[in-house]
Image (cartoon, rainbow, N blue to C red):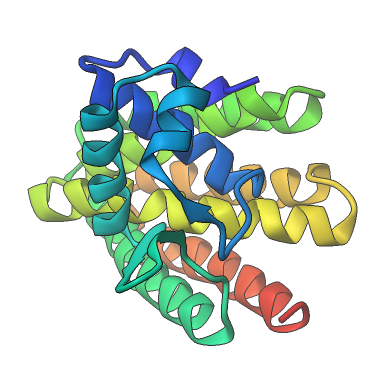
Length: 222
């Protein structure tokens, strides 16, 4: 089941190809190091070669795919260095988004964050990882919007898929996703409450503490 592509409306064939491949890459169905041949992807996805090539370029721009001379497009590796860089960047961007959201949010934005955090907690307690991932993505999008900085709002979705792949990697290696989901939803609830209370330090600390723990998880695995 290609849940992401099925739940996010695609405005073009290239966008649909992108989401189909995102879903497979983040779930490790296309493992790190996999060679991506456009002719094979065209047949597999049922989408033309030009949209597939456009999707591959977009994935390369996000760091999920790397272009190597004489090898072509390859799913990027999960390494100690790349993992460190992703978590360091997320810690900076996400915590700053939370801090600014606590200072700038509107009442509607605070309410939306609270509702999404509650929905995330419900999904974490359920059995449908697709619903959890969708709620997770919506929460971070809302956090980016509430922070009032267009560059941060645009950056969060760009790095999200790299971070989500690490989340699936940890859950696979640790034998399940529920413990991670519950820890994350607790962070989301704490952050949403801090944003509503206009407490920027508490909001930023909540995010940084969660990301720091996931970074420790990855250090133990790679």
